[in-house]
Length: 412
Image (cartoon, rainbow, N blue to C red; front, side, top):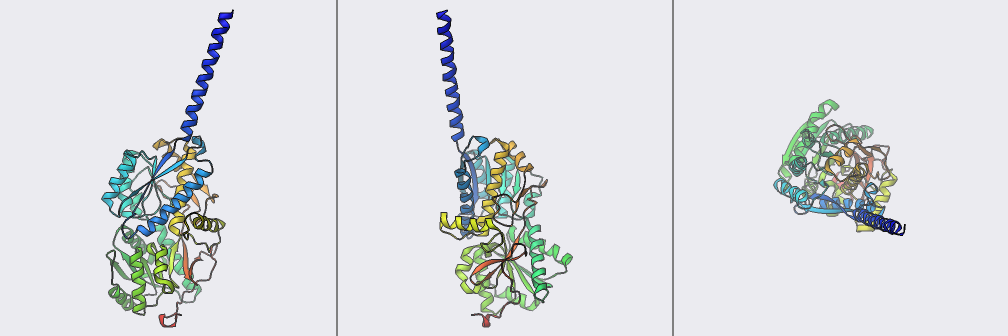
């Protein structure tokens, strides 16, 4: 009897030791980090914008980790692995390979430039690793039948629709309905795809593109283009530049006394645009995701948190990257796994509208069969009294737009 009790006691001890071992293993697993790749142009003319994309991603990741990590995975924390694609599609391929094969990331976020996203998403699809497109609007990114590519932001078609509708509404309300558009855009995939969508949409909405002016990136002289805009007597200039081009463009417009309304994108969103131009930036419009001056409580909180963590002003680029990180977080939570296919299936099935992490015009996430976010929209901001203020749509606008912009000579 005693022997039996002794053996029974050993059995209980073994079970206890095993339980402790298993619990410890679970705890260790819960503490293990989940690696997420971030592919950006940290060198080259887009580098200033990339820094804001990086900061927005880091802010979201810090919030997620501070709130307990990925709860369905035992509170596992997210770890960011950043890679520089140098604005080169071939480097994007190599870096995506490195992130997946060497760093063992569970997903990739990226990569700002459409031309690089187009190539690097091919790598993610090959290895069945989810890729959440933060920036990069070219339609063809999501038109190849890929299953592992999801876009957080609007594509070029949505950009065009919201841009044209904003121009129509604002100009009509000002009593000076815009009809004739001048297109001025850089010649990479980003600029060309955005301009093509405007050209397709314009006649359907009652506009006419009377000047179609592509230019090489980093152009230093826009005088010829501005001369053509003048000759075509356009009502509004719609432009898709990177930031150095955008700065040079506006300076050239001032020098040549060209004072038509300008609705920009891309480089107009970069803080260095207004830093370099100062008062010359006044009255510029741009396609925006957010501003601290918009009727959306999350935008104000996001602005404050960016200032607190980085000492920087929140930008649209930071806002959409923050949003993309939360979209991935929701996918990981729903999947309860780091397996690529399970995370992919979870991302594809998300349907979240007006979440607590809504900070901009991307009001949630629901992907169509191509991976496009059905809840992604654009706003329009205008630089007024030294800051960007949302002026369209009216639901989130905080200021009345000034369409009939003053002549340069009349500006103080």
